[in-house]
Image (cartoon, rainbow, N blue to C red):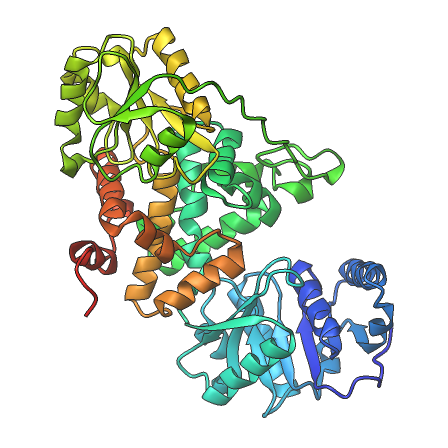
Length: 521
């Protein structure tokens, strides 16, 4: 394939013909640019050619292949106005490439790296003109995901940033500008999504498929953490986490997990290898149909105590047809205590337990409370059921936890009550923070650290996470909606139960929690 002359637009050079290099090349071609793709390995160059050909032909845009020059050496990049490096995350390799690009593509050409975690300043230091070097981080699949992170290193000039913003606009991408810090915005803030899921799995709280189901059908995420790791590549995800951990000199929040390392050593790399957390026969993706909800009849009365940890629960019960009362009644079908630790939950639970008939399920929100600390205070701990109140009204799946010695009859009644509310009960083992409150609170906390450190503005962080990872909400928006005091409560509960520093709250978050409820200045 040779470079055509049809398009007068500026030339784009891409170094690296792997998945990201192919995607960036495709984005450039679809934007009407002439693109030079450099890939020295013959087999990878052939795969890149086949992929680009199939994609463009399928889209009815095969004529754009005339604007592609696919070559083996960097010499062909002479004259391009922007060169984007997209090789593996190896600092020495990237610096070697940028030394050559600095000579082959003199000013005013802009040199960009698609690095996802490495220091852009360190990459640019290999050149004699670091002011022309910036990060331009695309997300996989590059032709689909709309976000691009523009990374401004200490030496990066304003002209370089503006040139890349204009290029992103030409490519129909939404660009954000972030500081040159480990992981930038998206890869940094997303770490807890994977890390907490891996820890839940290792703790035996639930199998990977159950955690994914809770995250997807309970929290509205498009893909659960384990499906997403398999899609990204277990090795790629592990390498990103390890890079973050090393660059931050052992920050506990980014500590890699032994489960991923074992999987990498075993070749269980996800979809590309045919097996990861799931099996992929012939490379097919795992698609599990959602279970049909078996909605039971809503009969009787529900006792609902005060508290703010189950927003929307009263309305959910009323819409299902239950009469809702504040104090426990003799004919109560079930009782819910939605109070948090600082709202007197332990006292309320003990009071409800004294008044309720023995076989009535006593539900307690368990995001900032442990059932093992509640049960000793009750006369009938065999009726105790923990539930995720924070996400009960919003999701289809409701997470439940059995109290110590839960009576089998009470368990069945609890499931019937949850189904009568139009929700699917999903049982997990007892764990501080449950699944969604733990993961979402840690996402909000990491975003709060990033905002407090000036990596990007709060609204920019939220935009980046929605566009770059398809999260249903920005993590800071979510923290605001849940309430920063409750997010802090989950984190402090995790810290008490585990003794791990990884759960310390960001100062930015603590300030928001203290000021919550006060009028805006």
